[in-house]
Length: 253
Image (tube, rainbow, N blue to C red; front, side):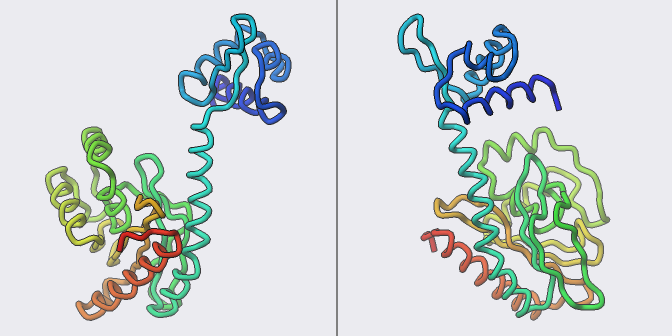
């Protein structure tokens, strides 16, 4: 990690001792030169993480900004929805005996943060923490489709696509068509795009404000797939997702 970043974190840590601190106090607590502290605090202020509190022209102090509270709330939300979703994921797994997973967006990747395995002898095994590009697989594509238009456009402009399997979407036009399809039907489907010989179906998880915070997905072996099986999985997964929405306080259905 960059030394400047580590020093900036050390500056933020100083505010746990006292809510408002002067430049001199910060320099003493962080054990850094005043010029270094001034440079770091100025950057933190510009980034919206620290606020200047000007008492008088000679009495200037700093405190942590509300943006840190906002960031903390996002962490709290993540912990909350995983805890809320788990019993519903377990029930879904019991009903279907298929891999049930929760995936979240981190940067420009999808990350598997929770999963409950199938007991079938032939099954997909996914490690918690595994990452996937957003254009491959039902859950990643759903996270992509639920981005706001400006974030989506920015992602697509910088996107370099590569084949993971022979079914992976590998051009922007086809990806845009797929996003349009997902937005229209409200869920995502994939056939061996990220994992070979696997079908995936995913629904969004909304928090109390209607923001997509994760996806709830089910993955099955291609050999077990049928239209009848798909219909059952869609029904059960949709119900589980809606129960999670309800528990998270979402009223939009």
